[in-house]
Image (cartoon, rainbow, N blue to C red):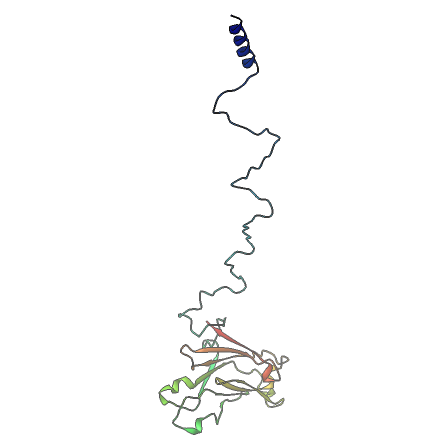
Length: 220
């Protein structure tokens, strides 16, 4: 009888101590414990491991050199590495005069003479030569110019020249660079037909030395 009493007392003591005998017990960390827990989706602050910098995207577009949608087959002149210019070799705004070099038929045309723009202090010639008469059209160059406003000032200061190798040669009166002459417009254009699409060059006759003038390939 005393054995049953002892067994009953033992069971009562175990229940009072709160012993959990379940096999599904789950262990939890206390709020103050960090443990070795790895967050599968970490949120970084100022230094993410794979940053996306809007100022330096992986495929940046340089706003200073955008692709020009107008530079296409529809452009009037060859437009690679050229500036857009609404006046480029435009006969609506300029007088025109053309010249061709040696075409295989007449050696005397082989750059021996200049096309003279009478009364305007301008002379030029084509520097592109074609031995095949079937390509004679490739030798043509055309000058686009405005009238010199003061003919009495020509022939006083001398002449200078500029050569675009294998394209054209131009000589001009230094008076074209004289900004003291009223109403002077010393911008001229030269068109070359040597390329599949004609090429236009803008020249500013703004120096007493032809080698120092401003020249730019342009299109419209």
